[in-house]
Image (cartoon, rainbow, N blue to C red):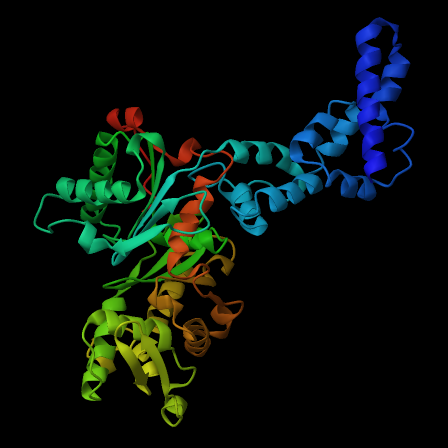
Length: 475
């Protein structure tokens, strides 16, 4: 291998030497022959073997080899080589399948324009170079209960905190609250707002397609942009959590079930756009209700605890969703864990009874549809709307939110949907657990901020906002 590479470099030197001394002595036929040949040492080597050899050099050296001749340029620009480089040299930022999804579907910005599905029609050599030059951005996933923040080049969020603690006094004007929220995050990250773009996830809110709901969304959007641009942020990309969760699952269309802090929303999304005309279903229970329900169980069973932090920790580590609730009642489901500084706790039936209220809200004193009923209703509306030629787009259901990480939830929801829906609608149905756990929306934002074309059309800049140019609302 080393000998072959040395011969390549010798041919580079020989070619550059000969062309610099007597460039006019080359005939057109010899130039053509030189351009179409890799050299006597390499023409007989199969292409796949040459690509394996080129993997031993670094990307910058591979680009230099492309200067030897047209044949070498064609060889080193082979997508298979640069796919390998993307995996090996940039794979620590994003896995290859995530990179491929993002560059194929998201690089054009919003509205989404899917590129040809054939890999050969994208230049991954160019994509590699562009991604290497993207400096990164600040990502803030402003969840309804907890927010996560960090650099887009990091493997995961660098910090997290309760949103309501950072949001300031709820009675303060929205501008002051937002300014306090973003200012606190920037201080914690120890970064100046003026240095990097920001990618911001927004909780799903003002669900309807009415004029008043549109005005409320516009008001919130204007307030966020005003605050950030007053803080001298150079560019802002604001996308709703449901859409980011769908991107994190490497999908652009589907139904996102987001179990938030206060409510659970069932959001249909087609080509990255929330289909509010189809209808966003909302269930009046979320993570806070489940935590409160477990707290009641523990009090009934004389399990002493000092704070809701203990209850939430037990919920996140011991609770699960039963595949069959009645069958689970007859089993011994006791399990114990130690909560730091609080001691040992043992739960039994509370472990699966807590999550059961998602499917049977009435046992928790909530008058609402079960989760499977809300999703089935949303799917019926998507089917009736006939937005595309086929019905496959809404048969992928992505779960999002910390509570959606409960073990067994995805399997139970899929089972209930198969029993609720007609055979035609249930055919091909798939429920995907949160791809990146409670940080799923943050990773969806990471896909966008590491794109080769970022910030591109994903972001709005201060001058654009000041001119009040029309910006497509994705949330």
